[in-house]
Image 1 (tube, rainbow, N blue to C red):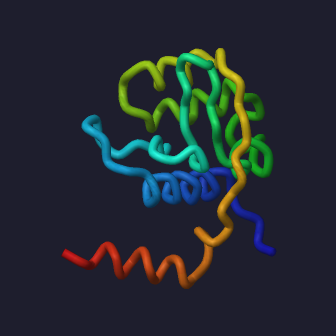
Image 2 (cartoon, rainbow, N blue to C red):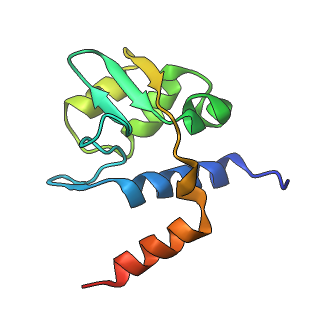
Length: 118
């Protein structure tokens, strides 16, 4: 298996978030707020639910700590309470199950076809 650079991993993870995330009034958010199965920030509870891709598998590439991961995510999050919590590092990071079908060629074709539709 080829070794990927930290930057390549971060770009791939960010691309997956943006492909799956809904558009918001402030722009595209890297988390899908609509589903408890997806990445999300619960400000009142102080919990960030996220992918094991950055929470454990490639944790060191994203800074090695929950706070560093939060700062990385905050840079791609619209201004607001969620971004403030991510930037603060004062949250609990909880892993969601990762949907490996997102990496499939079949899924990529479906997403590409859907993007071409008017």
